Length: 127
Image 1 (cartoon, rainbow, N blue to C red):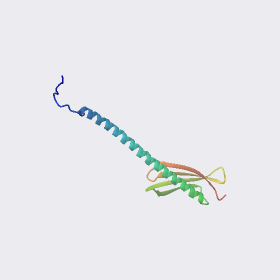
Image 2: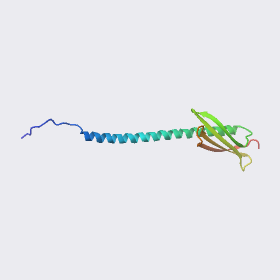
Image 3: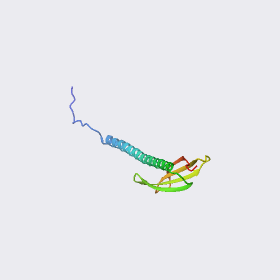
Image 4: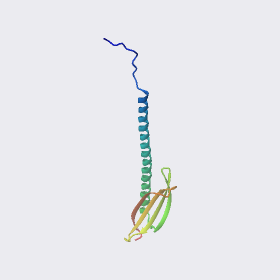
């Protein structure tokens, strides 16, 4: 004996299933956005450190090409990659009379925090 159908059978999702799916999607979307913000922040910081390292290396190489370097401290303002930078350099004697020690601190012009610090030794051409 075949049973007669009482009403048309409906296919689909219930409201509760849809609400649970939306809650899961919202949670995942929030996690993905949070992770992408972290990545963007870290890449910007890495770019700053890379540019600061380039500036410090450039300054050290420029000093190597100069003759008659004087001991002491100085500060330079530079513009690179649409940013203003401040370089502080200290030149001092070492225990080796033919070498000078150079320390360079690089920071953004509007911040006091050092982004990169480099130390190098330069042959004293006056010796």
